[in-house]
Length: 125
Length: 226
Image 1 (cartoon, each protein chain N blue to C red):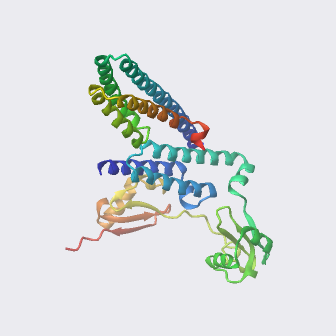
Image 2 (image 1 turned 180 degrees about the horizontal axis):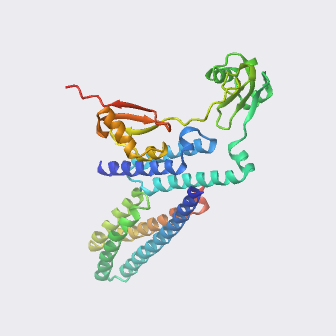
Image 3 (image 1 turned 60 degrees about the vertical axis):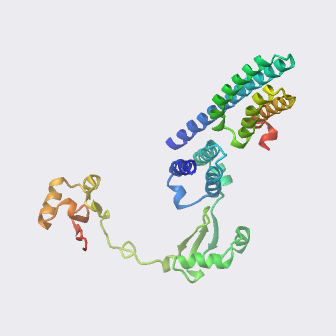
């Protein structure tokens, strides 16, 4: 019975850990999504200097969250985001219109992480 | 390369822990649910080692969850006989008083070759010698021979024999096992006397086994050949 109790405790811990990690992924992705949309707004207002500052902030944030997310999410999903994040600053500097599509794809990828990690029926089945 | 190496070491530790958690029963005999767990665990464990882009947790968590569920399930089946029948099935009698239950054999998809093979393993070559043959939930066949074919024992001859424990290993390759000394109700003085009588130290003994009556067998270590 000692073993059964130990297993129950481990299962409860794993459930709590999974729930905590889901919350963390949700928070981090929301934070990144908010920063991306702020950059978009600044670019629409033609405030390039502030948009570059925000992009630096995005890079910093991503650097911080990448390590955490790589323990929880498949690395190939993250490397796509890595490539997108790296492209944004040079695109803003060169005033390339492609920056908007890159920001859109970045937002989409963050939403996709949230969507695929949550235990929705379509993910389970 | 280093990542794969560390992952393999971690997974090894996790699987050893998981198998220990399942208990000794797992190693010797497999119930249907345990067989499923063993196959699944061995497959899941290879995934994070093969694919470095997969987080380790994706391998560790399912292994631990599967093993925990299996242990909890076996705990529940201990309490509930009905659940045990659902999960593990029930033993089935296939030979009764030397007669094969053909219907049961068909239900179990058990061929005559399978049956004979199991009987041969028990040193039985004639079905008429069998009183009962039972297919256990693990698939193993247990055979109970008819009284007239059973080997003669002291009890059948009416000879009274005192129960006797087998000898315990007291020194194993130069290492003294204190627990064994206690089990045979002997103390260090007894051991020292034996060692002195044989002119050896504990380190020089390869094996010393002794029973509760103090009867012992001592094998000295052989010197290494140059």
